[in-house]
Amino acid sequence: MDDKVKRAYELMESCSLCPRKCGVNRIKGQIGFCKAGLLPMVSSFHAHFGEEPPISGCSGSGTIFFTHCSLRCVFCQNYPISQLGQGKEVSVEELAGFMLKLQAEGCHNINFVTPTHYMPQILEAVFIARKKGLKLPLVYNCGGYESMEALDILDGIIDIYMPDMKYSDNVPAKKYSNTPDYFDINKIAVKEMYRQAGDLKIEKGVAKKGILIRHLVLPENLAGSQKIFEFIANELSSDTYVNIMAQYYSCHLANQFPEIDRRIDAKEYMDAIRSAEKAGLKNGFRQVMSTIKRKCIPEWTDNLKES
Ligand code: SF4
Image (tube, rainbow, N blue to C red; front, side, top):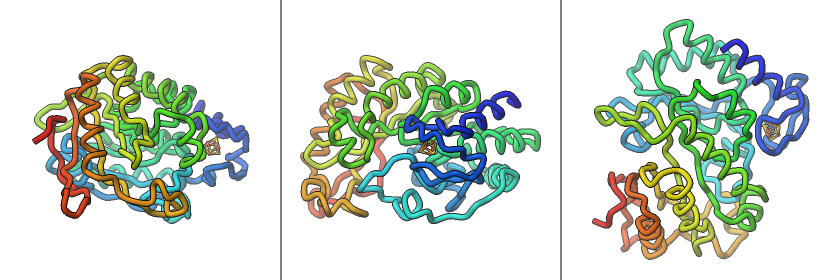
């Protein structure tokens, strides 16, 4: 673990923690694309009951929300945290303390939300917390735009990977997330996560290890859902758990793009569900849509079948 922390911090000297490879020296306080500095910034930490059922369980997921992000999604629902820098700098010792507090509260896991740009600090904090008794599974809840160097360091440390698969086409990825190589990188990263963690293992309703992929359906099928589901079924496993999310709404800068300046409708969502079934996926979660208000109701069903 000592060696992994050292290797992780070395990636910050000419920052290549994520595939942007800005090359800035974060150790010396230089700032790259994500705007993250040397100390981790946290916007909040608490037991979260709104994650997928095996992640939240009955006692909650111990989520730690990190400030800043290496993506720039114009529709980000967390943009005050991810793009406007809402949060507070903390030391790695404080971060370790948050984990131990969440464990003491009875959470099922420690869930790092948007961790990519603070991976070394998180690892160091895990190292400290483990010495003080941290035993919970670790969840890496990320945008799926991850470097192989970083994932290699995380091998054997992370229990549950929860990456996004946002787009299957680099054109919308560039337009809406300023990430022109998103799908190329995302495919490689998700395959590596699957190699490390495998299919999701759930014991007594709570996830212990594995991968759970999140996919947000976009208006006009701009996320290219079908191609993503085919990739998952063919390149990972048809047993892969996928959460197909309906909660898109126009926020942050999305109103500057008329084609995404609205919620998705029920047909768009059901088309995505059917394309997952057609690809052969059978495990995962879908959300309940109200066709009257065309809003996503935050309830989960535990399979991909139409009810
Ligand atoms: S983590 Fe931030 S500074 Fe480092 S390469 Fe990625 S965007 Fe650049």
